[in-house]
Structures are given as C-alpha cells and as structure tokens.
Length: 408
Image (tube, rainbow, N blue to C red; front, side, top):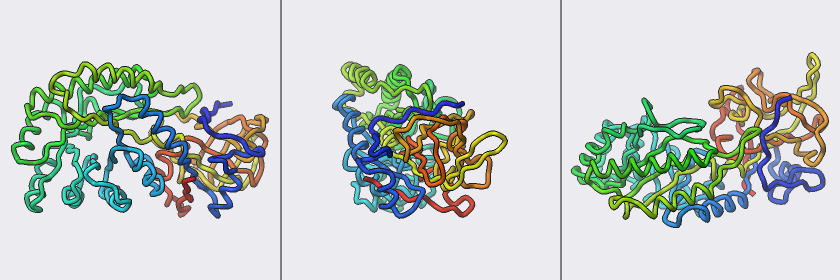
C-alpha cells in the first residue's frame, strides 16, 4: 500500500459527497455538463492571498505568476487581489491584455523571447526581465525602432540555490538569467541607453516547504541585491525576490510556516542597507496562491481485476493532470491527495490503482491506494489541482481534448 497525500483544508462532505464551495460534486458535474472537470474555489483563493498578506511585511508586494493557472475566471479574480502579474510568453501577454489589467504592473520573464514578443511587451509598457545580454541589446534596438522607452529589469542567476527546492531555477549553469558577476556592467549599459531601469529579478527555485530554507534564501537574495546595487551604482527601484513557496502534495509533507517566513523578512526589512531603503520589494508566487484551491474530478468508467490487483479506470488522466501522474519532473512517483468524491466520508476498504483512459502505462493517478469501495459511476477527486494542472498537461494527447474548468 502506498500512502496518499494530505487533502487540503477547506473541503467538506455533504450527504456523503465531497462539496466544494458548498456544492456537491454531482451538482458540479451537472452544472458543467461533462467530465472530467477542474473546479476552482474562489473563496479559498481569496483566503490564501489574505492570509499571506497578513503574514508578510506591509511593504512587500505580491505578484501572481500566471503560468500556474491562466484559466480566465481565475486570472480575473486573482488580478483583483494582487499587486502585479508575471508572464512568461507573448500568449500570456495577450491573456492579461484581454482582462484589462494595467500593463505597467506586468513583468515578462523567460529565456528565448522572440523579437515579436519583445516588441509587443515594449509597446505595451510591460517590464522585461532580461535573461541575457543579447536579449537586452535586442530590446534596445526594438525600443529605438518603436520610439518607445523600454522598461527593463535584469533576471539574475545567483551563485546559490533554494535548498529543498523541487525545481531549481538559479545557482550554477542555467538557461535562466544572467550570472550575478555580469549584472552590474549590463545594468549600467541599460541606464546609459536611457531606458527605464526597473531593477532585479532573483528567482532561485520552487516548491519549498521548509521555512528555514526560504528564510535563508531570502536573506541571500537581499545580500546579493545590495552587492549588485553597490557594484552597478545605478540604484535599485524594484527587487522581485522570486517565490518558491510550496504546498503539501505527498504523505509526510507539512505546510510552509509563512508566519515564520514573514517574521524573518520583517526583521530583515527593519535593518536594510542604505542602498535598499527605497526599493520596492515583490514576491512572485503562483502555485502557492491557487494550487490547493483546485480539484480535478473524473468519473470511473470501468472496474477490473488483473493478476490480483484492482484497477479503477477513469475518463480522465495524465492528459489533464500530468503532475499527479508523476510525469512532470518527479524522479520517484508518489501519490497526490486522492479521494472517492462520491463516498467522501466513507472509510477505506480496499487497495486499488486509479488509472486514466490513455493507452499508456504512464497514465496513473494513484498506485496501491487505500480507498473506500467504489464502482463504475463514482467520481474520483484529485486535489492540489489548482496549479500546473490544465495549463501544464498534454490535453491533445491521443485526441482526448481538454477538461472543463469552472470557478465557483
């Protein structure tokens, strides 16, 4: 038997069924008209962002990295609760333009930006987080051709990483950002070109659950930013400190202690060096803001036995929930939080494997899971599906198509 991950707080049973925002999964399926289905809770997103603001220092701004979940109703709601949006492609720029968000509060990171993307961002007044000296010079040429002053920041590849990070984005050779030692000279070049200098973006990793690791990373980010600012001599209007805040996916995971992180950062802010006193500070978070507010619901279409093991075959799978299947960067597959949503308050009775409908052995949602007895027609819930689910899965694989999505 393999343990399941912890079901996030905020989900209840109504008449034996999982309820999201007070609505049972059966009612939600009827509302959507088909399965599978992603359901996102507006109330839980609002509460998560509110709790985060209360834990963090008042001067710290919060940005949402929309790659975590760009479903338009979610994006529209989150955009009313945060201070800025972070994008990573021209397509995401079109998404934030479509909701009418103020583009001066948008930043654009990511290696390999095409000239067309640079041009669209500069014309829109978006801040470019530059990933290389070559990208900086391309942006300068495009800005001159457009007759528009580009808003430019530099993404720094630091000489440290986020300990315990599920995905490292900085420290050592990386395709992301500019090595810290090269940043001061490029910052001076940008300022001398009469661009609007917007500061630094220092992102080191993601999915950290250790408050100690996050506190250590944030201290190092502030120290590095102060050192670069000293060396460059051009001032530091803004510092995007990245994020890295994780959520519990697997058995044994504990929630990140944001109160401890906030207290430590408040102490750091009270003793900033002179050259950071007037800097605006930002956190950039995606998964942490929306991940636990989402549930993936898929119906059991077959129940079968094979060499002594039971398989529950669903109409969903990795084409909607690549991460839950274990095929999104994990080395050893572990079970996400999974439940039989139509028997949410029932006691576990059997060991089963929950699989999807795709013709590949990679399509697994739970291995050797201890779950209530269920059959064809029951609904399986995969939790922690609010981030990197629908937007990060191969929905076109085998012609299956995307799942429905609703925000309630």
